[in-house]
Length: 279
Image (cartoon, rainbow, N blue to C red):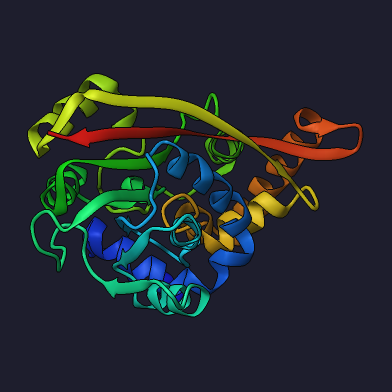
């Protein structure tokens, strides 16, 4: 077992932080072209950004921050991973970036007009606390716009991985206990959390957004999960070589059989774009 799995006694928050420090350099080449494709939809859910202050939470390599800057916003990005912040500073030198925990942001009350997060919330150990802290640093009636991956029935990459794991995984789930990955997909529950955090839950809007991932080959999804995913890829890295090879083969076969369009391998990636105003 490699040293990535020295996390057995870690909390979920420590697991996530350690994972993103470990895998940050591989993320851009594996997932960057997929997750960055959702950034326009996040920003399209907001009013005109020109001259206004925007915070990008869990900024990663700064994909959404860069686009917001291009649209005229004054951008500050935050991430708990020092390695991700280093990448963001290199990629988007005109924006400001800070290493920070979303539960304890280093900003004054009401400092920002807008906040965004591109696939950050499903990696937070306490989403409710994250919403409260984001609301604190937003101005009254400021807006938050964020993405969460859709249910596996809609999001092909997740379905392909889950089905292969269900059939061939030998080891128990090694991920420390944390919020369910689908925690924020229950709209009644989400509204309650947003209301308690200081948002006007009745202003919440949710829209399903789907983009095609045009794979280079049938193993690209497996490689991306194995080398560059913290939460969803952890189980692959925890498996023995034989089981992992069976999982890889099952994923490749599924892609060949169900996502082959005239020789082109295309899997739909689905996420919800959710926006809400602060009360």
